[in-house]
Image (cartoon, rainbow, N blue to C red; front, side, top):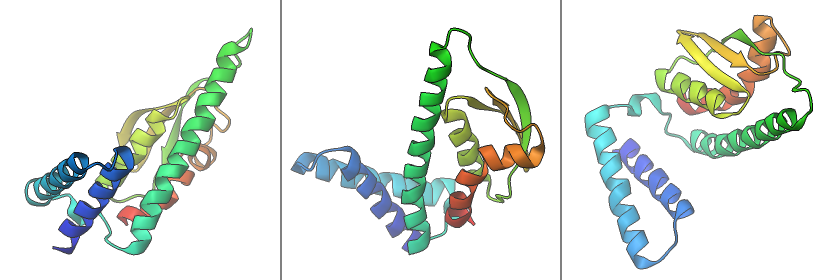
Length: 161
């Protein structure tokens, strides 16, 4: 029941963040948040992957801002490369490893990497991720992992375990 309540509160706060605060939106948000919480709780059973704690909740909020920062930084980097007379790229596919155990955490990591311009998750195989990188700065596994994965991974580890 604690996880159901936590997910409802989280989804409702997210709804409030994205919409206004008039009565109709508040009621609709409460209904949608409750419906989604019940569907995920009863049907999909993914709640075993979330840690329900104040620290995990705070890290989830921080992760959104970390992701947005990486998104802005990578967008500016790609835009800068595009406007150059000779596009300065050094593309390649690199292997990175993750320490995340949760399949949902790995999914979020792979999507976070793909959503930041300049990187694309090509394939995942367990702890191995193959990433197409627009400007390979480190071809070795540890260097590429540090550059691409670690900043996201440290927050996802706390959120998902």
